[in-house]
Image 1 (cartoon, one colour):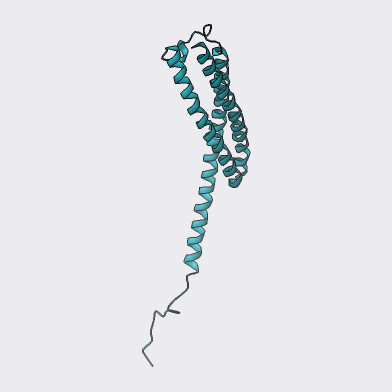
Image 2 (image 1 turned 60 degrees about the vertical axis):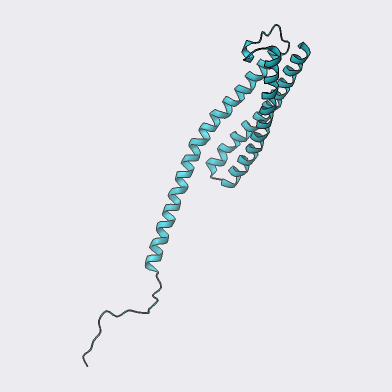
Length: 162
């Protein structure tokens, strides 16, 4: 069992290290979104979002593997929660705890930048919405004044006297 638990801890720590690298990349991409939003560069913003999504997909895969290892470890150790594990009895527990804390720190940093970006995105969306409304209003005015007269010039008065 000790060998199994060490392997589980090792695998889980390795997965967290990979996740940490992906989260660091996501943090950089998230930070790069801020100037793209401020510039109103939707193409650049879209590219950054797509790159972030690929990282998220990879993190989801790692999380699935991590959960599988965690369930096996809990089963092997006979506990319901990882917090119940005695770190002195299980080598690798402290490394896992440290890696988990680093991942959580990165997630918090990403979250704080995302909140800022979300607010700036709303401002950009409102600004673009106002521009679209102005364009639609100008289009209506233009159409009202420049309607082609299909029947030709109309005559309101007809003089029947000769």
